[in-house]
Image (cartoon, rainbow, N blue to C red; front, top):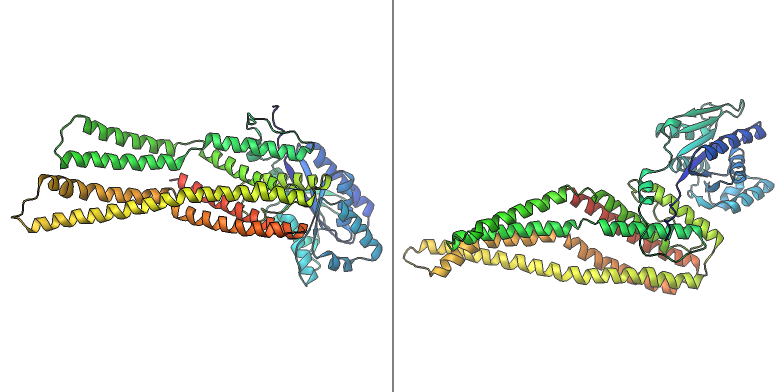
Length: 493
């Protein structure tokens, strides 16, 4: 198979500007010059993001579409309310532009229109890499105006390009801080493709996403450090070393192999600990696994008429460019090749819900018995340790009593030392493997997926199915991010 096509890197240029501009043609030319310069000089694909208020916003949207930039519209109010700000001919143009948008998002249901426009402006700043503003440099003349949005962008350090609507002068601020490309996505893109080839797809975006998911999944599997297994080995070696040392004393053993055996256990435990601390690939492994699961989630929803915004409230830890790339490829694919409802629903039920159900059931069946065995081991070791210690204490109060040799060795000598260590080892293994949380989480996820399956099976419309899918994918991604937090914390110790 040829090298997998890399996922593209997208940067976003947001826009804000005055509603009233005296020289609309001149402003359009200035915006065109800035966007054309961005498009030509940088080796990334630029996306345009703006509202559609009358004036500068409409000019920006027209120019962005004219230059073949992907354009996403942010509306401060629902369309039925937003249209009240336009005369009928102007609204007809807005509707025509919205039909060409790659995605249309409504920011909120604010009653106060100025608050709604302010929220829309700040959201534009929050979701862009560079803000382009048509601004006369004057103080705010009302809530939600261009001056407030520019001030907010400066406050959070967003790079700015400012166009004066009167003189058409272009001024740039903090552009030296704009970094093109993304090092994390670049590293993931450079991973070798998996050995097994994938079926070819006419949809280039789907093909790129599939190839990316398979190679990061393969890389994560290949470089997984198995830290839980290695930590378990460390605990086991320490318990064994304690047992050998105690046996030497309790049974008066003088075999030369015993101290060497104890030394080997201690050196082995130390060696495993050093390997864990010096596992250079662990960060890349965690990032690959996280990227693989995010891509899997995106592919599971591929075919929806509109890309589900599943990741908006997640802490991306440097993976935002990946989210953006998958989102853009998905929504472009949805516009070009819509999938039939029944076909998509059956595929989602079979490949996503049933597949994840089998995964969580399998892990629950494996982790539950292990937790019960370790609990039983802790309880049995603790009770026996208490019994041995109590027997020894009672024996000290009865100086005339003579205990058999095996009692002296096993009950008074070996048991009180080794059994507490064994109990501690059982508790350590429960903690190391995070068994309490995992068993509870597997059970919870199984129940949620079983409920979601029933809801999805009954869904008869895209809207109903999308709501079920959003719940499923957010729950699965929350599990992934929870795993990421626990894994990263565990690996750092």
